[in-house]
Amino acid sequence: MNKVIIFSAPSGSGKTTLVKHSLEIIPELQFSISCTTRQPRGSEVRAVDYHFLSPEEFRQKISEEAFVEFEEVYTDKYYGTLKSEVEKIWNQGKVVIFDVDVKGGISLKKYFGEKALSIFIEPPSIAELERRLNSRGTDDVETIKTRVEKAEEELTYAIEFDKIVINSDLNEAKLEIESLIKNFIEETRN
View 1 (cartoon, one colour):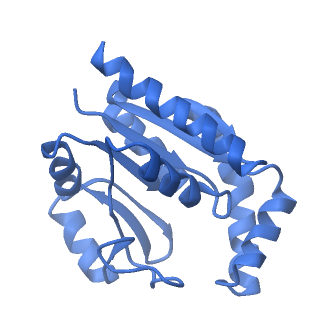
View 2 (cartoon, rainbow, N blue to C red; view 1 turned 135 degrees about the vertical axis):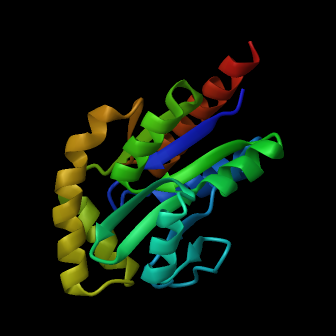
């Protein structure tokens, strides 16, 4: 059976770190590269971290119904998952792993149902989340303020996910994630 793992979290919760760890530890996983209209951050690479599209290109793909899910997170800041990306990974016999925003995660769970394990990564507190965003050094003060406000709202959606992992200790969170994913993959083999 084709399976997917969905990681969602407020920005700065450690989601991407945990996704990368999962990919290193569990060979059955293959990362689904999302599309976005935002600009690359830091050392992000096109077609590795994201497919970077213009808002016009993204809207064209929406009209072609090319997405499993998409979201306009901020004005003209779209994120989405291409159907072709999922099919490509499944055709390789792999389990798809998603790193998506909270609303995208909920949409993906609804779309894939029992084929999906949805995991919400929660920061230990809003204050810690803000500290992590500031220490990244990738966003200006106004962007961080917007992200913190959005995080407060996103935390209210945590109960819509199959599992919630509080990332207060990264090593503990890594072990919990490994166990959740391995158990989910094993379930399909039995």
